[in-house]
Length: 187
Image 1: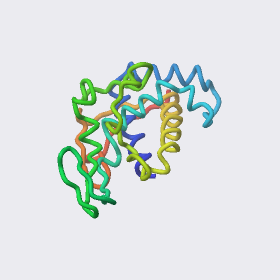
Image 2: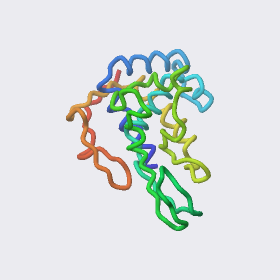
Image 3: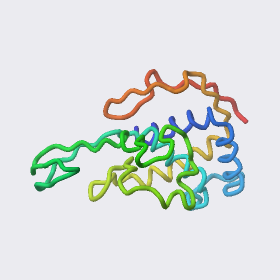
Image 4: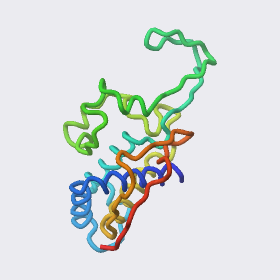
């Protein structure tokens, strides 16, 4: 899907400008998968690669905002909400908010590992929405992107040739404005 492809594109961008991250993903893939094709069962062992995907989705959530309609009257943050009101869940804003994330603009996959992962504020990370209306394909997307990133980086050397930071275009999805340009060579 478009959102899965966007996550993978942004992950290739980030790992292209972060050589140490790319090296760690390759080493993990070689240890876990070796020369065979990756399978879904490999996902749980690809902890660092999975963390890179999660951090990519934090920085560049494919769906950066969601609209919901209030089912009942409520109060949120001191604001009265009436049944039927439209509410925007601003995932991009939450993902870049210093109240929830130390150095929110920094690419730090380690924030998804070990003790750091346990400190996360509930609902500060919304790449798939939240609650009963969460994306049904969220788990599959995580597995697909993790396995694809591991496989691609073990086989290819991407070199990002565009501006850093890459400009974004926020329409329905969060896309790279003008695309992401790479030179790619086989390893």
